[in-house]
Every structure is written in C-alpha cells, then in structure tokens.
Length: 289
Ligand code: ATP
Image (tube, rainbow, N blue to C red; front, side, top):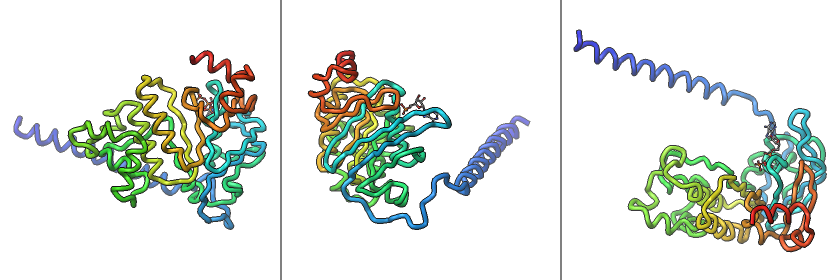
C-alpha cells in the first residue's frame, strides 16, 4: 500500500499543477482577447520621432471625478532636462501616465515633437520614450538579458557602452559570473540602487529621444545615490529628459524645475532661482538638507 501511496500522491501533485497552469493560460488568452481601452486613430501618424521635445498645454485631468492635474503647462526643449517636484500625491506620476497615454486628458493637450500624442500611433509614442520606472521589473534571468531587453537587436558593444554609461561596469566586474549573473526573482539579488542602474542601462540601450526617470521613493545610501546621479547624467547626455524627483539633490542641474502642489504648478525656475524665491521648493530643499 505504502509503495502505491508515494507515486499516487506525486501524480495528484502533477495533476493539480497542470490544472493550475491551464487556468493561467486561459486567463492569459482572455486578457489577449480584451479590446484595448485606448485605440489608435485610423489616420494616426506612424512617423518616428527624433527630438523628444515635449509640451503640456493647459492639461487638466481627473481620476473618475477627483481632479488631480489642473491647467498644467510646460515645454521641454530638445536636449534639455526638466524636473518635476512636489509633495506626495501632488500628481507627479500622473503626468508620466498621461504622457504614455494610459489615460486621456480631460482638457488641454500633450505633444511630442509638435504632434499631439493622440494623433500618433501608440507604437510611435512608446518607441519615443524610454522610462526608468520607480519600481523596475526585472526578469529571473541574467543581468545581460535584463539589459538587452531594452533593445533585443543591440550588439554586445552597444550593451557594454550602456553598462558603462549606467556606471554598472565596476559592479558587474566584481561578480564571479559577470553579466551572466542571475538577478533572482524580480531582481531580489540586487540592491535598490543596482536595480535602478540596470533600468538606466536598459533605457539607454533603447535609444529613445525622450528619457523619463521616475525616481524611486525608497531611500538610498549616499554612495548608491551618487552612482545613480552619475548614471543619469551620462544617460541624459544627448537626450531630452524628464525627471520625477523625490530627492532634490538629483536635480540641481536641471534646466527647468516645475514645482507641483495639489495638481497645480506653483513655481518654475532652476535650482538657484527657486532657492532665491524662497517658496515651496526652498521649503522642500531645507527639509531634505
Ligand atoms: P508620490 O510622490 O507619492 O509618488 P505623486 O505626486 O506622484 O505622489 P500621483 O501618483 O500622481 O502622485 O497621484 C496623485 C493623486 O492621484 C494621489 O492622491 C493618488 O492617490 C491618486 N491616484 C493615483 N493613481 C490613481 C488611480 N489609478 N485611480 C485613482 N486615484 C489615483
């Protein structure tokens, strides 16, 4: 009897695993069949963008009925760096979600290289922007494959260049398996700062004209912060960049800083002029320093 118990128990386990996997596959096909909420217009432009020049023109937006952004306007010129700062919940990440067209604006417009984002294909829009998100999704694969994901057709030389620019080479050289090191489930074997630099290397490799950096809220030690700062500086070279900043020390070099409060722009300027203004930016700066 005991001799039968173990194989039967094992068969039961296999059966349950297969049933679970089939249910997941069914769910996945269900998702694939679902109509996208935002569709390309029939005459949407599919011309590739090259500058990443971004303009928000009197943009207002509500989640359901709750107003979040109110009359937000700014222009980010090609090659410049703009930073958006403000209290938690001010609407900073919502600006990025609207830029990616995850939601449609209620009023106003957003344009890239002079074309309203609603009038270009979503493919063109996604190709034009490389994002380093707050919480990077890493696959349970090697560092190399996680970086290559930014542009699967990239050559090894281009990948090495992105790694150098993201200030990851020292870290990778210190690993016995180098870039073949597995990052673990969701990148758990990496620190927060290393994960962000992998995401920066990935974004550099993608080669989009507009780079968006949504800074993680989690605190980093000053060495990791400096490494990220250097990586960002390299990445921003030759790119137009938009930084959603939580640590003001990362944006003192921005050409333009936009200060949001409850969804409205309350101040704009550079680091120096905003400190002189002695308004909300100066208050946030004093709290952090
Ligand atoms: P933080 O600095 O904490 O990341 P933030 O300035 O980026 O904040 P947002 O994430 O843009 O703020 O959120 C602005 C407001 O919108 C918040 O009050 C938030 O709770 C709300 N919000 C965000 N996403 C949604 C959503 N999908 N549905 C409803 N409300 C949302």
